[in-house]
Length: 514
Image (cartoon, rainbow, N blue to C red; front, side, top):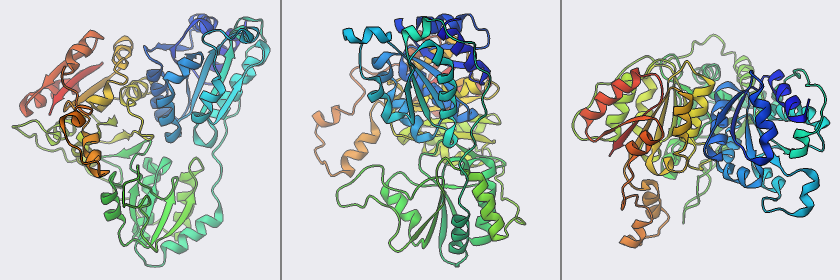
């Protein structure tokens, strides 16, 4: 049994059975081993950023890793942007990066690179296997590392000869790590701060935004009067019918500062005190009001739900019943096609327990607000701000949860970064409806152009944010990759198309011209 064969079976033994891949020559023994193992699912992507983004979506939904199989340093580099997003989301991922045989490195072949230096900024654990006999144990170590701190990225570099040389027998399943515990003193401090009768809030992210976490947070809010606010770009949040309403911190500084104005006590739960996404001339980078005390209840990656339960106990708040959202589907709108029309249509026809992957940028605010009272759903955000995450993330979420409808809300500019994900959606026949907001410009950049004080609004400047000449045709692109697509230019067209699309099982796309 060679190293690759032993490694693949070891992965399966440790409940890692999905591989998103874009392989090359150095990975051929790994590819062959997957091909002979009927327990490992291999999913081909046409670009490494699709593989890494899909692994992110998979990890967010299941809390366990898929793996990627990428080709040397350049292949890893193509996937770095979505690994950046995954790191910010705390997603468990195991990357296997093929490398030249150990004895081949000294020749400095064209694809030789410093893989560790490329992997370190987006990985919490990086290692190179030294020989085939070490490879299965390295695989177990990588899986264990990916599950540390409730989820992180682990990268194992696999020289080609480690894959083809004779190895040892596959290793059995290893014990899974548990999240680091919260600190009891932090619970007591937070309880005292929240019991002072001052304007207070819980700033939450991570597992605090799970259904269980939100219900505990609402008990705290009822006892203390604290406001509940989520970070702007959370990795995942439970919303809709049966969940607890939580406000989302605004993206723009003016929005966030208004939400936090007058707050005297801030307890951060699985996150940190909020800061601006970017610096702006003459504006503060921090949103915490002057004089507001900031208390950390529990660090990101630690036992967040356990910390919230401990705070409920400390406050004697177990008697409160969580205030759950009720179902209220909106009426459809008519006339001009706007983002609000789209939001009404999505919520009107959304099935229960859908997954919404949101990279809609400026066009999705209406949908998000309306979804407070949609059927129960999980909402996934662009945690790291690196665009092109939406389509791959939706692919990974659909692989993780094949019995749930995945709805991807995406801006047209960001969709072009990883449009190849549509091909894999068709190949795997996953149940993803992609809604592309086609305003034919980088609208967020036009807004930011004014906000940073760069006032040159001439044609040459605006052309750098314009997506016309030629215009993108998402229907043709989608159909060319095997995904049926339609285009809506009016509210009536969209309403008809969204109703049909929500009932269809399998990949589909609607281009929304707004």
